[in-house]
Length: 334
Image 1 (cartoon, rainbow, N blue to C red):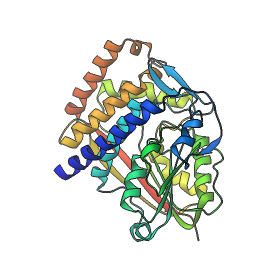
Image 2 (image 1 turned 90 degrees about the vertical axis):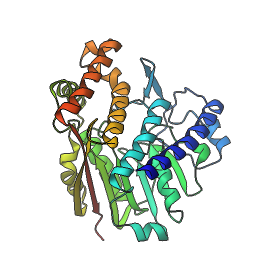
Image 3 (image 1 turned 180 degrees about the horizontal axis):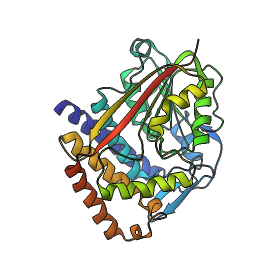
Image 4 (image 1 turned 45 degrees about the vertical axis):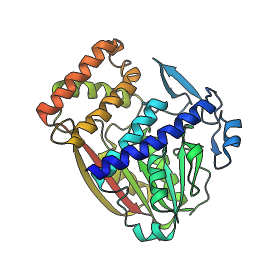
């Protein structure tokens, strides 16, 4: 356990220090919306085109993606990037690794990897450091990449995985996507997996790591909160429980040789991991509050909302609530 936390703290301190320097040098709030942009050039070029992927809207002091056709419910600001950095290290510890597809030998020799919805690219960078012979490409709808500290075997594109993506057929050996439950409608899920199928080489692997909006063994306060969330998602034609549908979605897209597993994380009980995961969930509740207000106007009152979330934290201890990951990998036919 100590090795994991020391690694997490050391890496996160380095990333945060460099990211803070970048923030001071590149603060933009622009509103251009291009379909897809490559950012694998010099930092000066990036800054001169910083409007790419920066169509934002601000709600209650939090920054959200402002593009039409992007339904992502969580913010895309620096605070959310910090949460995702920390979340990655917890997930890696719980999974005892960064991936499940049988690709260790290939990654060590060198393959092409696409990380869809990469966000601040913590998984991308961690994998790139572990497998320097492989080439990693991250894509996201928002410019949230820490370009100033980009490893030489990483590049980024600003684009939407559920729309046209700028890669030739059969370009990648491995397609990775994690936790887009709050980002995609059902149609967008289908389009994203069609894109994944197209850009993967024959025999290439896709790996999806997802969750459902509802947790196991919820208390009444948490169940009511998640009901507001699932109603909001349903109203937007999103899938509140994609974890249950991974096999159906992958099969529909043409993939074969499925492998599925679930991993439970305790929420605020049993272990240090449970405490850390509650902090991540609480941080997520803070970020998504502006959206939840649409379903429950009482959440507009910050004190009321904070007290509500605190009651959920105690419920999780009492009811032994679990968060569940649904992990699936499959292959494109040869």
